[in-house]
Amino acid sequence: MKFGVGDFSGQRPPGSPITHAQLYRELLEQAEAIETVGLDSMWISEHHFAEDGYMPAVLPIAAALVARTKRIVVGTDRLATSLHSAVRLAEDAVSLDLLSGGRFVLGLSLCYRDEEFAGFGVDPATDGRHLEDLAQFLRDAFRHISPPPYSPDGPMLMIAADGDEGADRAARLADILMVDPTEPWGAVDGAVARFDQARGDRKGGLVLFTYGGLSEHGPDAAWAEVADGFRYMRHTYDRWMGREATRELPPAHYRLLLGTPNDVATQVLEYNRRYGNRVHVVLRCNYPGMDAAAVTNQVRLWGSAAAIARLRTN
Image (cartoon, rainbow, N blue to C red; front, side, top):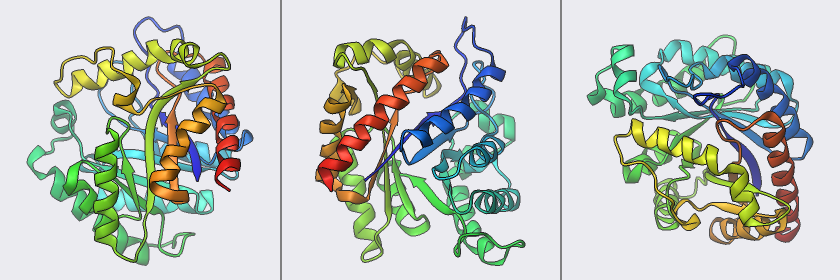
């Protein structure tokens, strides 16, 4: 099993005393912390034209993160393909592959915000086709681009399982299937089964995102640490998607990992039981509005939970 943190979104909620300059500097420090505690990856996410400054330019940030670290994977969990030039993206991805020594993963996804389609002059009806065309173009470009990539086949591609069509798309075009933290267990099982069936003997990677928080004092204290930031994050996404704001939902709804490092290690074993050692669990324990010390403490505790889980699965 592998363990990561993300996504990091660079959001600054209204009234936050933390500036975006601070947030970006702290990203680099948190990358070092993720590496120091023995975790395996760090993931960043993009959106555009957001009032809270949601990170709009993930590839320059990824370059800074891979330059600051030596071992961990750095990836985009959801890069909205319709908003990017295919040639420019191929060149940027290969540059990151070279800079990182093969540690960069390019995660691709559909776009869903009307403001982003309008701002970039993109027809929403072409979004799915654009993702497929771009993923195929990247595969071809990585074989012919100059300079050539560090990795023999170019940077690994990851595609989100947005329903059955997304799982099929990931199986055909990507190396890795990504599953969103809002998907309940049944949907995760279905997406993984569909991905595996479509790939046959070509086993692909599996990156499962989940939400949660940790505390040495148990699940209630862990929830208290992250609740405000979690609610802000979910309310923002719900508003963008035109959905009713998230109510207080039971932890099982979001597969929340909550508790002490030992508690969370036990909960993580369910991922191993279902999907084996190939699973890469990425925990969002960093939420908008949390200060750097709180995020670093969450990373430290998640690193402890990961170490316990590794011992139990080896």
